[in-house]
Image 1 (cartoon, helix red, strand yellow):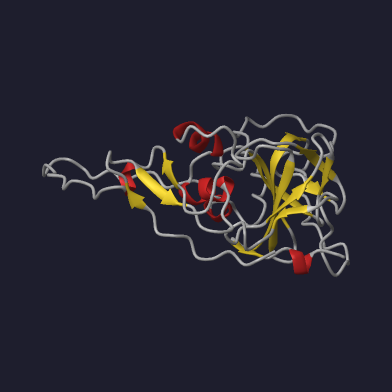
Image 2 (cartoon, one colour):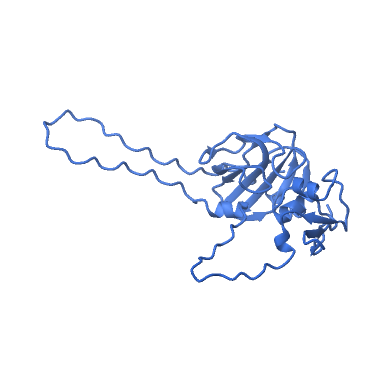
Length: 261
């Protein structure tokens, strides 16, 4: 796939809306990801009949981002008013950064209040709190396994350095790429739809997005090849596929050289 040239700098339109000029290699999906909006919102704002009906050099309106079109007016702040920080956008990186790196130990039960002395009773077995689940170990394979089998629709460069998109039929099983612990299950990251994150013992985190369904819970320990969900088209995509990422900590890396051939 040809390298994607640097995107053309966006500009403000006459009516104050923010616009982006499409460069070679860009898609409506990558533009939506860049500006934290949905593909559907771009289609509606620009009166497009399909997400694929765009051409190089076309200016597209970025809905809901008028904050980028003009500088914010200076705000006169009262001495008694406390400044309010704007909420940060939720991303995979911020999601990973807020999660603990080790399991939370089970809290010990509080001691019972002292009681008056009583006649000695027969000894009984004392119940102990279960030990936290052991951290998983790597499977021993040199590389990660493919979570689904299919054609790569979007490579690492075309995804603006996030991951790859793999073609998959709706409802097909998605497998864990390596042994690990599930650290996130949800749909709170804009554009990703239903998302699962798995932390692996070698310091990597794998991400599985646009799922139709998710069949694991946060905190579960999974093995390489275990089914964790089903492929779908949730989030900012128009056909079934799996968005797959590998991150060293919170930093995305190209998964292709790390996947078994």
